[in-house]
Image 1 (tube, one colour):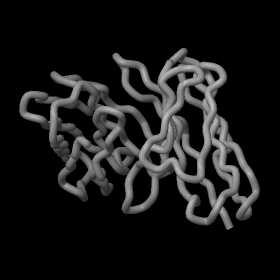
Image 2: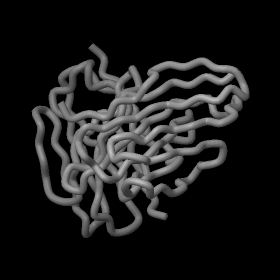
Image 3: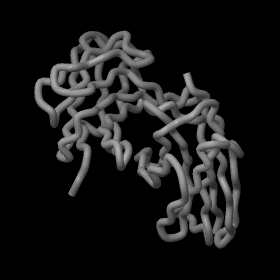
Length: 111
Length: 104
């Protein structure tokens, strides 16, 4: 089954403790991206990647890092999480004739 | 960037009713999608529809690219249709969504 897999689904962590949210797709898509969703602010793009070793900032990149060492994986890294990064996060991959496929989301709470 | 406006912001339906959701966008696009976010937060791809009309069961969508709008039709609504419907264009500029509540 074609899918984007995010882990974990839920995460509660403390301020300053580094964490990684994993994202993997099995569709051989070149384009992948990360979004956060907050009440009243909708979905906003954090980072995107056009291909392996090619990443770029989206609208809200501060406090986040990404890497794209292989086509299928696009992890999101929070080096020093803060409470304002509490949000619902989505990973997505894209194919031109089908559009975007989203992962199931990660609910992150930073206390 | 491209502005995406959805209407109405909220919609309450009785089960079995039909409805139309609208998405207006401010510039030409070659990438438009409709998504449904269910009550568990999952984003489900409904249609990738840069132009023309598509149908999938009780749902259908039409995009008139030259007039910069897209419509999502829900027929014979069911309670499982409840949630937020988003349209998104280009590198995923999302509209604010239409919250649909279907009552039994």
